[in-house]
Amino acid sequence: MNQAYESASFVRCVVLETADIQAASAAVAANPESGDAWMKKGHALAKVSMMREAEECYAMAISCDPFNWEYYRHRAHRFLSCWRFEDAAADFVIASRLNPNDWNVFYHLGLSYFLLRDYAKAAKAYARCYELTDADPELIAVTDWYYMTLKRLGNDKEAAKILARITDHMNPGENTAYYARLLMYKGLKKPEELLSADPEEVTALELITMGFGIANYFLQNGQPDKAYDLMERVVKAGDENDCYFAFAYLASKVDLAHKG
Image (cartoon, rainbow, N blue to C red; front, side, top):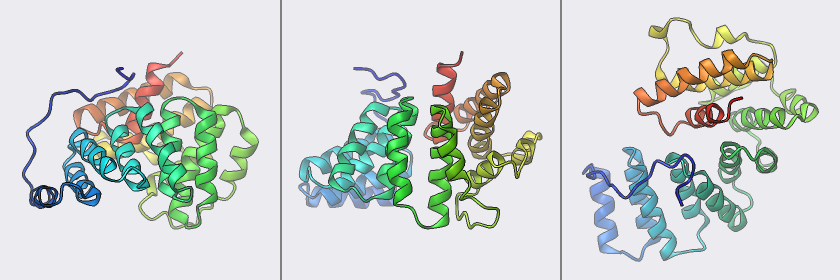
């Protein structure tokens, strides 16, 4: 079955022989029944964006130890990178059953359902992720996606409730883009403050991440034409800069495919 956005195929690239990949391949050759050895090889391949090859290594790890939740989590993440959203959701569900207390599992399970446009299931996953959250950076990340999900479900009351926890004096850590988007949703920043109009001042990843957030803001505020124009810019930036696995790029592609 070809999934709607799947980019994987039977064609494989020549594997780059980085030092990490060579070391991981040697470890697998020495102990092919070690799930951890296969997992580490998957990590090494993913580091150089060889997502399909990484996913296959995680599958081998699962064959060595089918009750290890981490292997499912990592394979699911690489399924997302290959646009195999159904497979990603399935693996994240298995991981969540094997470990019901991992923040990353529920965060990415919510994303998988968001990309499948199953917002009810996405909200359920994000609600559990939200329960598992304590530090500011993680709270900011999950609130951003959870808020968008609730708004798409028309649950404005719950959306306002979680947005109220976001203040202008938090520590976002690496999640500065998500933080800026949330401050925009709160009315503390304007869209034009998040993204410079000068393309020379904006990196591709900034355009992709901020662009989708601003586009989502436009959708919420009855400006679909501006939203979809910005999503087109997001997808173009992703295509031209090999950012095909950025979450905002994936979400923009899905929204554009269903616009109108």
